[in-house]
Image 1 (cartoon, rainbow, N blue to C red):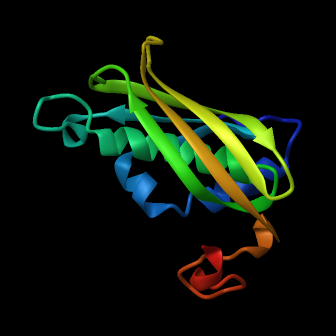
Image 2: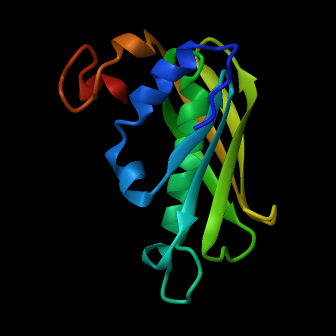
Length: 157
């Protein structure tokens, strides 16, 4: 994993997102993470394919969503998704897929992100737009939403 040297707190934030068991089961990893930016990747295998032989849209969405979450939370404030839109522009083949999230706007409570998903050779296969609600809670105090620590799941929405 590559993390930017100038932001040591991203190491702790990445460890927080390493707890995402669904992303781990999908084979998704955070490659780079800094305030307002993240890059995730996965190697699409047979288990990621739909009945047509292309990478399943849900797998692409999950890859983009992980980049969105990492970029939105890299400021150190707990951010949760409000709205997401996905456009599939080309069938994605097996192999390396990369999602790059870039912050488009940031305010104290709302932030927006544009995520491009490309193959390992740079061919764009999808675009994801995400809007996050910034809860005003420090990420290191957020806890896991399913355990009731610090932030009950009912307050996370």
